[in-house]
Length: 603
Image (cartoon, rainbow, N blue to C red; front, side, top):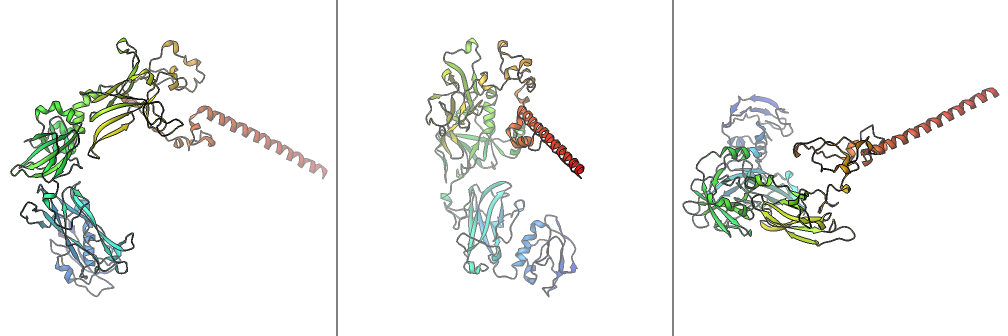
């Protein structure tokens, strides 16, 4: 037990009067309880705790309201009891009944996290409250059942209220229903108080009951919901995962349920109280009877252990690439009544890799020049550009004459050419030929693709993820020839070592020993067996040399610190300056010595 001025964790200002033996709670954690007398209180009645005790309903608090505050271990419950005791002498301990409703009626392991200045019993995320009771089912088409929590609140703690923008004080209460890290419903409520009487609840609006509905985060209802108007799920979350051409996973119970995959190329899906509507194609999904997921799936996605597996029909595999270019949703209905229970969007990264990964890995991406062989010679074509976009419905290559549409003296808002790209259905790679006249010009990709963020088919523009060169502002990629001397550093053709550099004809090679800066050039990159052998580092210009004492102080932290010639020239300047200063000091010293000698002779 603690005085209100006392630091917790067993440091008491009061006098220890009695120590009780440790007892065990239901979670087997031991709690030591001690009774104290305080200078500010004349009550010395020892407190006794039942093995299963409730912070608000126990008679302990009613019989010992003279104590200002008290607490006990474990620390996750200490503040709960402390606040309960602070309010035990007050008649303003109130509670709000929080109802939670799910159309699928699955309430197992859903707990309530409570926080805010009005919360008498705030919880930790990992120690949230299980339901207090079960709500009786209301008959009729708009009926509902569910579970509820009785959440204690205390509006009289005005010292914890915060001023709003209007100057009035307010208390807050946050509610969030979750199962582990999976969130279902919740929101934040605020209760305004008069600024002159912030510690009173006389003018406080405090609802006795509120309702939370599954998949409606940020919404706390003050009236019972009409469940016939509540959508059976949401597409704003993607809780189903399509992991292979055979399986879709969803963390849902499967007993007495049936599932279906909804597909729409125009993104016309919507969720109503009767389920998902607006699909182009409805595909039934069979529940896999085996409980554990296949080993190869768990190795790729270990975090999905425990999910229910839904099997895709065998005849659908050939259509998967086209289905992945539209909007997808998985729905769940009652097998007995057919009532819609839930629906969710679909994550597709797993099936994308499974269907396209092998073929796409063999396709060179970005801009590639023709290699000059006879079979690759096409009149007027200098190369090919390719991009992996398996979910795009259409991709166009946009070619520009200038590097930027918004900067420069002659901006070009419109492309000089638009070329429709061709899709390879096996790899998901889009490609287009690049004309010789387009070399050194700039380009972007324009794609029509379904966007999970907006739930619509959007037209987006992007640079090439495999760009070899970009405009200075990064807004456009550029077609370049890396064999052209204009793209190569001084002496690049003289490097030796192999690697993936372009082959240079012997007639164009410059012997290393004749290079004007051969003492600064390395012998060339080593031969590499794979692109993964390359190590690329990001370097900060200032950090590279700011503390390097081998660099002259004037050049530290600057670009010139990367230039050996500049460093050498700067050092020569400093040496010359030091030599001149030394000569000047020597001359002055000689003059001083001569002056001293003359003075002595005169004397």
